[in-house]
Image (cartoon, rainbow, N blue to C red):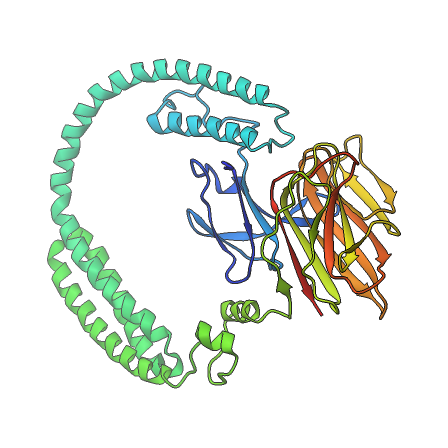
Length: 446
């Protein structure tokens, strides 16, 4: 189970996700959203824009392709601690708890195998943990001394505060009554504003009454005796606002309403309007002819794993790889086939890998299938898109993916002896067998 990483395959519908990280998160800026296979010009995963619906829920505001793998990660800042314990008075219970969560979150990233370039290895994380503990212990000692002195002062302040609170109670009561009247008038005014031209005259009257109520609130803080008169004026204004709101409701009944989700997906109603959300739901509910297989797993221990469920006559095929475990020596080769006959030669393809600028990046020409992966024992995620060129059985392929050791791509073409009906996986190196781990799906359309 991942601690700092959430993954989910997008199958259509609202792009809303729950942030179910272990220990939640410290800062909203620690959260990133990526779609596996969507890379920027530098070959890195591109960050997707999103908004927070609540503390534990987000909505991704950029479109996500169907069947794509969405990755939501939490990455803490490892350049500095979240609390500076060198300052006096910072060793509070909450500060110590925040620091403890920060250290555990950094360890979560190490356990998930996704420490970024700001920390090279787990030893550096451990060194940060030891440094934080030393600072916290010193600050806790100083805080204990300060707390003793503060406790004595607190008793004196508490007595003074009690006397002040008694004096303020009478004035606060009067001020609250006036504020409630002002709130009622303002609420009425908001309803009037929404009605348009039909309620414009009443809105002006409500605005005048709201101003009177605000003036009453100010006067109440000086003299509680005048609060009753001002509250009566505010009540009269609220009554007028309610009358205008009733008229506005009658007018708004003539305006068409927004479509429901059922109306949007059915596409037959012509008397309501479509919001952006309903438009997205209608598109998701009416796909453009794709058929997708169930999740598939590799034939473990063998040299070939075959999927033979593509109907003859299709023009487009997608093979989606989700965290598939590469063979222990090398990568996968993906072959196309017609029937049970797998074409293992005759490919004109090129494979390219990027290690983020490190040594080992580069490309090689291939003649045996599409090469998938970036190193031994990697978890591989990506999409191979195949398109038939012309009326013959020439297929153009484009594979984009990510592995533990970097991004990779493979592209090229092959001519099949007949219509494409099957996809096969084999290890890159002879004498190596397939291993369990991850899934793949195949989608096609004519």
